Image 1: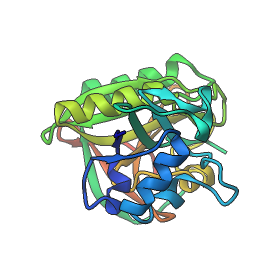
Image 2: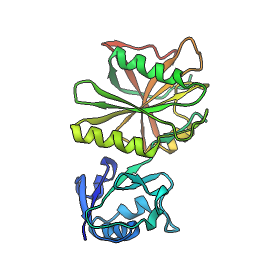
Image 3: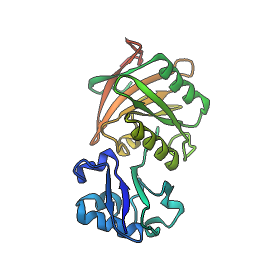
Length: 93
Length: 149
């Protein structure tokens, strides 16, 4: 099983500059933990201390926001693409 | 007006500059947001991204629209030039929230203020590790008014 992972510029310091890497796993959580073994430092950018996804990181499986799928437990299948994007947010106060 | 050190500049064409202000006005008093891409020479694309928060004091780019825009840029070989949003009621300067949530250190953060509705201002900043510096905004070769700094 192979999952393609699209890595944003700001996280490529963990992937040796690669914008696309691969990982294994049947859930998003497994994919993230597998990524960590290949690209140390990525997991803590994605997962908070309680094991959930960071509030200001957007994760997508096949371009769908995982908040509307199963969150970090979203199932993944061979050939799926996981995309990572830090949120773009702010405000005037 | 809040001042920080000035470091560098961003070049915009008049059409893009006007489009950012028009976008800010289009949904006032709510904050609007979007992205600019560059092909290395100028602004290659302007992406208006829905504000998922639809708030007068907060913005959060709608995740799917954000992803589409980012992938579009990457697929075309463009780079992210700027992240912009509007401040409908406050000056064009990054708020504490803007600084805390600035996750794109290589982007220029552009803020359009409608504090003076008849005299909108547009200012540009780098936000890196909590440090804010301002960039001069150049529109069609001329420095754009930022108001008194």
